[in-house]
Length: 463
Image 1 (cartoon, helix red, strand yellow):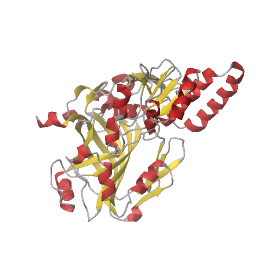
Image 2: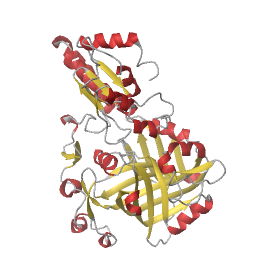
Image 3: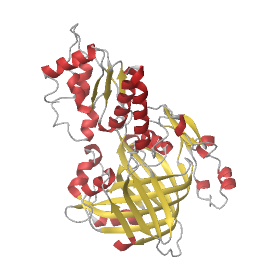
């Protein structure tokens, strides 16, 4: 953004490339290189073109508004571009307008590569296209064999849809779901009589006390979503406080703050979930969250944490929330403003350990988390509320929460009861950047139920 916009040599190359009918592609801040490119008729190249690029709200999330020389989104619009962006910030968006291709942000890189390959194949002569397509298909198999059945440009790869799946439209996206499954039949609002018939071993008495409400969150859903039978393991570690503060947007940090457990150290909660039976079919999930104070409350360190535990009213800011089904990804990202994307996740219940293996988007093992099956005493069911504050697509503060009904649970502070094996994938690298320290607590929860409520605007709640 400093040297591209006014680089005359680059402008000439881009002009010649574009006017000769060849592809011009730019992504993220690189789109700034298109700003001052003029065509032979004197018009700016981007005038009346539909394009995307790193937007101003994303600069705010990245805390780079003061570091960049100008607002790229505004500058593109000023030059006459028809600017488009993803509904959810920091998610993939690629726009094609003739032989001009633009990507919104770093998270668009993979989709951008696929689109560029597709366009090159279409431009290639017939005698070379077959070879190009073979290379493209081989690449797809190698990189996507563990990924979603829906490509990120929302075109169905029919050979990747499983025999037991069907495809539905959800928030304008084509999403595979279990054919005849709960979501396919009831769209997150199944009668409890159906659950009782199909899973008679599940106690539904708690759910009978909760009334659902129809909501429009970019698609029609019913709040709360019910999670009838689930398992989880949680590890709470100390982490570098400076890093935690950097990761929370300023707008959120004005409301909640990372709990300071010791000088310079905060808390990170890492939870692996297996949702065996829920309104949205079964899936697995990873949550990495910062443990925070309640809104507008003082930060009294361990006393703040003890107060939340005593009141069974926990607060946090969600950093990462990958899942292993496309249904869970789309619903979470669009409807709940949560940082969800899809990765392969293995749930292994074997011997005296409950283990989750998490893979990167290429199918390589990223890290694993295993918890010892602790002895379960005589537990009385209890309900704990887990709250989260985040920003919606318009940058507004929202508050959502989950009520968790614990049926079986045990805890430990012994580090030998929890095995966290970080390797070299993106999630491993992220957790290493947090400077994880002492294990504060390990929770083994082999059986729980939950009700997840859709987020509401914080201003509306106050009113």
